[in-house]
Image 1 (cartoon, rainbow, N blue to C red):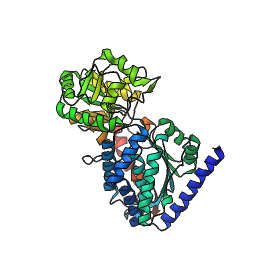
Image 2 (cartoon, rainbow, N blue to C red):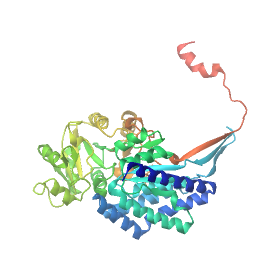
Image 3 (cartoon, rainbow, N blue to C red):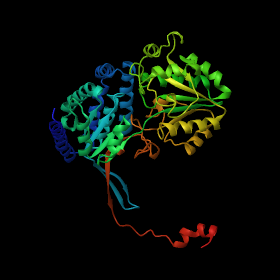
Image 4 (cartoon, one colour):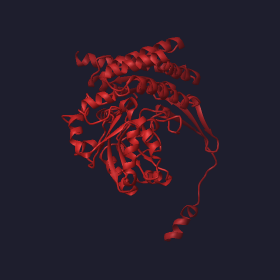
Length: 469
């Protein structure tokens, strides 16, 4: 297909989205925006649709497993709808008479969203809900393997929009086949770009000339210290690492275990299906988990039996193995196991003590995944604060199953999201979970108030008393 035709198609989609968004905002109300958000939520959460979308996601991408995607689609969407249920995103959202300020919520316009193959249903649904809740239109650019699932999701959303009297042009996608040229045009011509997934796409978004929110790479490291509940920690790590076959950027990739409890914790991992292989098998794992420098499609995001077969481990692990733990020491570009593995494989590191674990975890973050998150299992709460004060990370997850906790959970206070900002450490413009407020403009109405002007002596009193004038 000629490039010019591709570009014209994208321009037409953006044009129709602008027209729909203009009418949506012109006739807007909180009730209307909430109705649109609930329509999208029900489009994915209705049980039969959720099952079909989850099956389609696995069959088309070859990643993850159906049961966990059903759970993910349901809980992530339900949690997001809970978060935004009472949030004002239309009209006056705040008044502060003392400061003479009135804040008005304004839509951004047309949002462009690039979404990954690892979460081809949950991530776009999350973005769409946030977008329409704030009065925007949104255009999706799915990964090539995610196109079929995205088309089906949008079909269900449009069905719900029809029932609710909402224009379907508010939610569209780049037509198949997807190309870099089409995505680039979307990046350049929409009003805000949201990018989850490939760091190449994130960089393209930041250089597109459009305001952009990209999120950084994950490479989760978790410290297990000598004060932790080892059985509880092992269970949480197992449930997190195996969920949806480790497709999440928040799945544990490396464990740093304090030496005093190392052997005992290896036993605890074995009780929950974690088989530990000695460092002598490191090259065996690397040679099969990576093919020509890239993660093997035969191993990433696969069920345990498929992974074991892909790694030629049938004669090395017991039949009840749910995930592989490989002992290693090296951290950095020359040591692939210290990076993201997108599979049921965890690298194990020994640390002499907590301070040594901190040194290793800092090195890990600086190598890959800076800004994203890190975890610790401990009964010493001061250690989590020390990590937060010292390490280049935006989240320290304490005594939780990491992949469930990082993106918001019903038992922690983070916003439900599938996109985690990594701050300046990860080269991102946000340091928090992507959520509704990133899809809004705020206009301030400013009234005059009695002057609040301090005396110079009051401002500098402490400074002068310390160092003199």
